[in-house]
Length: 206
Image (cartoon, rainbow, N blue to C red):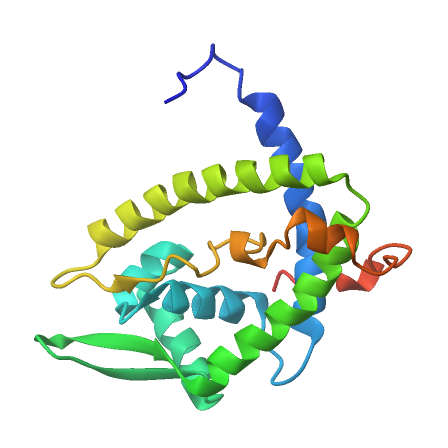
């Protein structure tokens, strides 16, 4: 295990990662623009959270989204009305409600990930195989570190039996899953990428 560096040693990597995350947000928005129904950024984050931990309750979801209970309840109500989420009593606690994705929501997530993967492949095609391999290695380590924080937050905020975490689900950021990153050979075989991301592809913050 690597040891922590001196104070400030992680500032530059964090700044580089932050800049990359902003670019990924543009690619991420391309996936959000595809298909129907229209899903807002906050609704999208909620779907990703439920996918990552099927059976999560409202309190735990609110903790992950940093939202108050009334807001989370309204958000889930809208998603349920859209046919993307189900709410059901917890089998071991009558006071708790389990949240689960519907087949329609899973199809929507898969569709938008496919769109995003094409955009990512176009970018990776501009990189050398060595750089792609290094990127994937770093992303795996980052995902494992982030998953540790996510699991700790979930365990601390979920009473009773813990929800089942999905290790392949998106971390609650604009970054794609590591599974969504094509291998270096696939990236090099991709078609010529577009000139650049659309300015209008930046996700809405409302």
